Image (cartoon, rainbow, N blue to C red; front, side, top):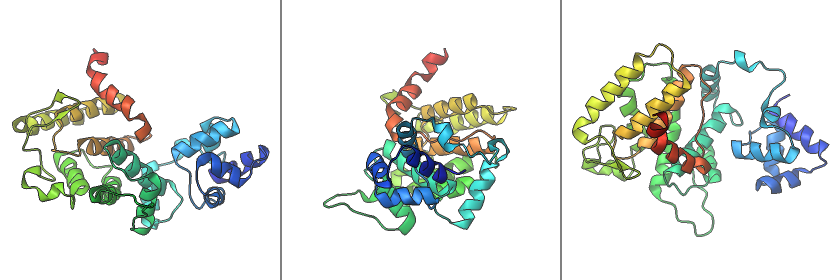
Length: 286
C-alpha cells in the first residue's frame, strides 16, 4: 500500500474529509486528492502533520508493505524518475524540497509553493504585492540543475573539479556572477567568515581543500560520521565567496547516494540547530 492509499485509509478511519486534511496542512483540498491518487507526494512537513493527525508514526505512514526498502537502489530510482520527468515521485519531491529548504536557509524569500510552481511551469507565482529577488528565482532554477548534475555524477570520486562545478551551476546567471571578483566556479579571492568565525584565507583554500579531499578519499568505508566531519571541515574552509552551505549540502547528498547511506535534506526550520551543530562540532568531538 503506497502513501496515497494510506492517507486515504487513515483519513477515512478518522472520519475526516479531504477538506479537513487540507485545512490541517494549509493546502487546497485538491492537493489532498492528488496525494491520495498518487499524482503528487506530500513533503516531509506535511507527512509529519499527517502522522500526528492520524496518531501514528511517520514510519507507519511511509512504509510500503509491498516493498523491501533494503533492496531499493535509491540512486537508480532517482535516475530513472529524472529521465521519465514524471510528477509525484521521489525525484520530483526531492527537487522541490531540497531547493526550497537549502535556499531558504540562506535567506531566499520564495515559498515552497512558489518553488514547486517554478519547477512545474518554469514561471513564478506572485502573491498580491509580493516582491521577490531575481537571484532567489535564478538560484532556485540553478539548484534544480545542480541536483540533476549531482545525480548523474553521484558515483564519481569527489574531486575539486566536481566541487567547483557544483558552485558554477548554482551561481551562474546571478548578480554575483557579474562581479569579476566573485569568481563563480572558482575559489574565493577575498577573505570571508561564517558565524563570526574566520575561514581559510584565499591563498590557503586550494591547499586546504586538497588536504581535505586526500583525507576523505583515502577512507576505506564512508560512514555518516565521516560525511558530517567532511561537511564541518568544508564549511570551515569556506572555499567560495558565497554559496558554500548549499554546495556543501549538495556534496553530502551526493556522497550519501554513492555510499549507500540514506540521503537527507536539512530543513529550513532546523537551521538554528544546523548552525549550532557546525559551530560546536569541534568542541563536542573533543
